[in-house]
Image (tube, rainbow, N blue to C red):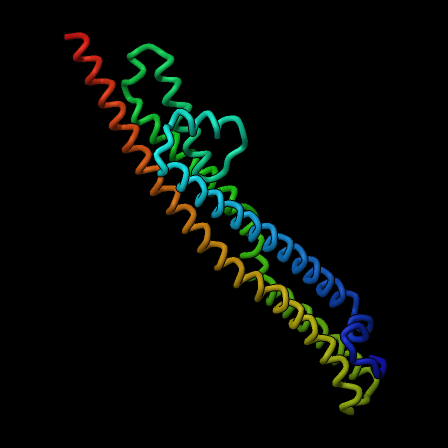
Length: 234
């Protein structure tokens, strides 16, 4: 390898072999991709958590379920709002159908709530697998670039016959630069993945708690309607 005097980051990149350059470029693109996912997810979780806070405040304020449904069904909803609209839609379909539609209504509402929760969680978890993949594979990809760079450096040193530190150090530095970029991509991805997974779990727990409470409310309403129907029949 030729004697390298420029040990800046850009200089080491330019002097690296084509394989190491490809590794570095790939890791940099992976890092940019991860940061775009991280920013997008942070904004999404912020909107979701604020939406759940607002919805719970309105839901428990005493507003009628019918009025709340009319308000939410006319615009896009997320998280708890989506669960509420889906359950109320199933509830209203049963009212608009024959009285026999009340049979199994509670089970259908619970199924609708479960499906809605799964879809909302899927939205929150989308692309998190990319962060996990970069976090686990990034250091190894960087290590591959380092090993390849060291092999190339030693091959060049053996060919030139010059083993002075000025000749050896630049090649080793270029090779280690690949590992540094791998860690640069992997560490934020790993930390962000763990943080975001924790927020997914908390959001899922809140939605499941609301679903249980709302299901209980509707169950009491179903029992009331069934009892009223029996009284009228008697």
